Length: 126
View: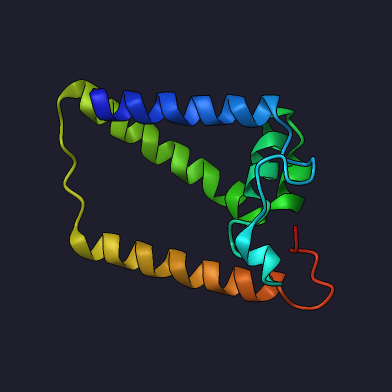
Protein backbone atom coordinates (compact mmCIF):
# COMPACT_ATOMS: atom_id res chain seq x y z
CA UNK A 1 0.00 0.00 0.00
CA UNK A 2 3.01 2.29 0.30
CA UNK A 3 3.10 3.35 -3.36
CA UNK A 4 -0.57 4.28 -3.79
CA UNK A 5 -0.74 5.99 -0.40
CA UNK A 6 2.41 7.97 -1.12
CA UNK A 7 0.98 8.98 -4.49
CA UNK A 8 -2.34 10.02 -2.95
CA UNK A 9 -0.53 11.97 -0.21
CA UNK A 10 1.71 13.77 -2.70
CA UNK A 11 -1.22 14.63 -4.98
CA UNK A 12 -3.18 15.86 -1.97
CA UNK A 13 -0.29 18.05 -0.81
CA UNK A 14 0.16 19.57 -4.27
CA UNK A 15 -3.58 20.18 -4.60
CA UNK A 16 -3.65 21.87 -1.19
CA UNK A 17 -0.67 24.02 -2.16
CA UNK A 18 -2.45 25.06 -5.36
CA UNK A 19 -5.56 25.87 -3.33
CA UNK A 20 -3.59 28.06 -0.93
CA UNK A 21 -1.25 29.80 -3.41
CA UNK A 22 -3.28 30.99 -6.37
CA UNK A 23 -1.60 30.23 -9.71
CA UNK A 24 -3.79 32.88 -11.34
CA UNK A 25 -1.43 35.49 -9.83
CA UNK A 26 1.26 36.16 -12.44
CA UNK A 27 4.45 34.14 -11.80
CA UNK A 28 3.25 32.89 -8.41
CA UNK A 29 4.49 29.41 -9.38
CA UNK A 30 7.19 30.57 -11.80
CA UNK A 31 6.99 31.13 -15.51
CA UNK A 32 6.09 28.50 -18.09
CA UNK A 33 9.01 27.88 -20.49
CA UNK A 34 6.79 27.08 -23.48
CA UNK A 35 4.65 30.19 -22.93
CA UNK A 36 7.83 32.25 -22.80
CA UNK A 37 8.74 30.76 -26.20
CA UNK A 38 5.35 31.80 -27.57
CA UNK A 39 3.24 28.65 -27.58
CA UNK A 40 0.90 26.85 -25.19
CA UNK A 41 1.94 23.31 -24.29
CA UNK A 42 -0.71 20.74 -23.32
CA UNK A 43 0.02 21.42 -19.64
CA UNK A 44 -0.28 25.20 -19.79
CA UNK A 45 -3.09 26.29 -17.51
CA UNK A 46 -3.05 23.00 -15.59
CA UNK A 47 -2.14 24.63 -12.28
CA UNK A 48 -4.90 27.19 -12.71
CA UNK A 49 -7.34 24.41 -13.62
CA UNK A 50 -6.54 22.49 -10.42
CA UNK A 51 -6.98 25.69 -8.40
CA UNK A 52 -10.32 26.32 -10.10
CA UNK A 53 -11.44 22.76 -9.36
CA UNK A 54 -10.60 23.21 -5.66
CA UNK A 55 -13.04 26.14 -5.73
CA UNK A 56 -15.61 23.97 -7.59
CA UNK A 57 -15.41 26.22 -10.66
CA UNK A 58 -15.66 23.59 -13.39
CA UNK A 59 -16.22 26.01 -16.28
CA UNK A 60 -13.22 28.12 -15.26
CA UNK A 61 -11.10 24.97 -14.92
CA UNK A 62 -12.13 23.81 -18.39
CA UNK A 63 -11.25 27.24 -19.73
CA UNK A 64 -7.77 27.00 -18.19
CA UNK A 65 -6.99 23.47 -19.41
CA UNK A 66 -9.74 21.39 -20.97
CA UNK A 67 -7.46 18.36 -21.43
CA UNK A 68 -6.75 18.15 -17.71
CA UNK A 69 -10.42 18.46 -16.79
CA UNK A 70 -11.37 15.69 -19.25
CA UNK A 71 -8.48 13.41 -18.20
CA UNK A 72 -8.89 13.90 -14.45
CA UNK A 73 -11.83 11.49 -13.90
CA UNK A 74 -9.94 8.76 -15.77
CA UNK A 75 -6.78 9.38 -13.76
CA UNK A 76 -8.72 9.32 -10.50
CA UNK A 77 -10.46 6.09 -11.51
CA UNK A 78 -7.09 4.51 -12.32
CA UNK A 79 -5.69 5.67 -8.97
CA UNK A 80 -8.71 4.25 -7.13
CA UNK A 81 -8.41 0.94 -8.98
CA UNK A 82 -4.68 0.72 -8.25
CA UNK A 83 -5.28 1.47 -4.57
CA UNK A 84 -8.12 -1.06 -4.30
CA UNK A 85 -6.01 -3.73 -6.01
CA UNK A 86 -3.10 -3.13 -3.67
CA UNK A 87 -5.48 -3.22 -0.68
CA UNK A 88 -6.70 -6.64 -1.79
CA UNK A 89 -3.16 -7.84 -2.52
CA UNK A 90 -4.02 -8.23 -6.19
CA UNK A 91 -1.95 -7.36 -9.23
CA UNK A 92 -4.03 -6.55 -12.27
CA UNK A 93 -2.75 -7.98 -15.53
CA UNK A 94 -3.04 -5.28 -18.17
CA UNK A 95 -2.31 -6.45 -21.72
CA UNK A 96 0.71 -4.70 -23.24
CA UNK A 97 -1.22 -3.83 -26.40
CA UNK A 98 -3.89 -2.07 -24.30
CA UNK A 99 -1.20 0.04 -22.66
CA UNK A 100 0.38 0.81 -26.03
CA UNK A 101 -2.93 1.81 -27.66
CA UNK A 102 -3.94 3.92 -24.68
CA UNK A 103 -0.59 5.71 -24.68
CA UNK A 104 -0.78 6.24 -28.45
CA UNK A 105 -4.32 7.63 -28.22
CA UNK A 106 -3.38 9.92 -25.31
CA UNK A 107 -0.35 11.32 -27.14
CA UNK A 108 -2.35 11.78 -30.36
CA UNK A 109 -5.13 13.61 -28.50
CA UNK A 110 -2.62 15.84 -26.71
CA UNK A 111 -0.92 16.71 -30.01
CA UNK A 112 -4.29 17.66 -31.54
CA UNK A 113 -5.17 19.62 -28.38
CA UNK A 114 -1.84 21.46 -28.53
CA UNK A 115 -2.26 22.38 -32.20
CA UNK A 116 -5.85 23.56 -31.68
CA UNK A 117 -5.03 25.64 -28.61
CA UNK A 118 -2.24 27.42 -30.48
CA UNK A 119 -4.39 28.49 -33.44
CA UNK A 120 -5.01 32.22 -33.59
CA UNK A 121 -8.03 33.18 -31.48
CA UNK A 122 -8.57 29.65 -30.15
CA UNK A 123 -10.86 29.35 -27.13
CA UNK A 124 -8.67 26.45 -25.95
CA UNK A 125 -5.77 28.79 -25.10
CA UNK A 126 -5.39 29.23 -21.33
